[in-house]
Structures are given as structure tokens and as C-alpha cells.
Image (tube, rainbow, N blue to C red; front, side, top):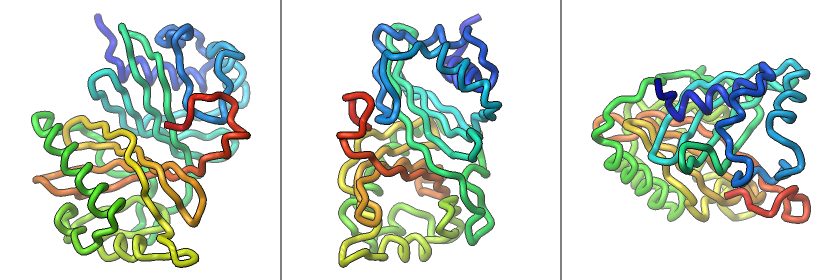
Length: 254
């Protein structure tokens, strides 16, 4: 029986908790490209690394997992002494994982609407609408988040019933607009500059972008749920990007 890419990645990440070396076989370490700037590449086998991490009694939970062609992307909960929320992205080639990106943030909340950073629907639907939903989200990010056309928010987002899981925001398009209007030293506090990747499966779309938050170079990972041609729900993580002088590999965040 063939094991899905999502299941293989789930088993791989769960082995951080269990220390089981078996699931690491899904990774082609000879070709593996690591994009987490804080992680060394090739200095320690993944099986040994995960075994060491398992001794810290971590907890690992995949809340949502998706597959988009050669990519698997997952919405994760981690507890490594402190609780964190993360998006993990893996690229497969010839049946094995050969490249990895992630974006991690401390878990805070619930937000003003009582939502956590991970609760809400998890089931994938509308597979036939994957490309339409990908296009919708890309257009939203380009038009509203990059170009700052805030008057067009309701062209893309359902004005009544929009659920936001950002720990500092709340439900509804008014809260989103207020957050995007906020400025730091005259510049947009949340300032998207470039889209790097848009991954999708059915009604879920993940957009990985780069920009500034409060003047700090940051990576934005935004997961959207789409229904009836409109964005109806949003989860995210924001992570500051360390200066190049502090990187432990040379592959870059994106």
C-alpha cells in the first residue's frame, strides 16, 4: 500500500517526538536543501537530530496537512519547552523529500474573537476549484497586501462571516483593515513586499511572502480557506528573518 506524501511528512515530524529513526528515510539527505536559516545543513543526520530532540520530551501535532503536486505543506503545533505554531513546506523529487522551508511563531492568544491560532475547519473540499482558489488568494495578496488597495478588501473577503485566527486581530474585515492601516514611523506596520510561493489544495491556500513588520525584515505565511469564491477564514505565522551574518546555511529563507 502506497503511503501518501502527507502521511510520510506527518510520520517524519512526529519522529521529533518519538525519536523513531524510520520515518527519516523519506528524506534524501544527499540532495536535501534546508531553508531554515537557523539550522545547519549536513552537519548532523536528521535521525540523530530528531533523536536528540526527542529527549527533551517535545509534543508534535499536525493540525492540517495538504498536498500540491511535488509539495506538502502542513500547519503544525509544537511544544519545545515553549508552545509554537509553524507552517512546514517540503518539496519531493522522485518520491523523497529534497527541500524544506518553514515559518514559526510563538503561540499566543486567543484573540479578541476567542479564536486560537489553529482551531477551525481542517477538511479539504472543492478539489476541482484548487486553481481558481489559488488565483483568488494571489490576487488578494497582490492587490491588498502588496499594493495597499484597502478599499478592495471586500472584493476578495466575505465581509460578513470572515474568521481570523491572527492572535492580535479579530473577526471581520474592519479589524483586518485597521491592522493594515496601522503605521510605524510613517511606514506601513505590516508591509508585504514580495510573494514567493502560493500553494493550494482545494479550499485551502498557503501564501509565503516577504516584507517588513514594524520595520523588521519578516516572513509572512498566510493560510486562507475559500468558500463560494470568497476568502472566509485566515491563519498565519510571522517570523523575523535573521541577518545573513547569522545564518547557519547559505540557502536563504525562501
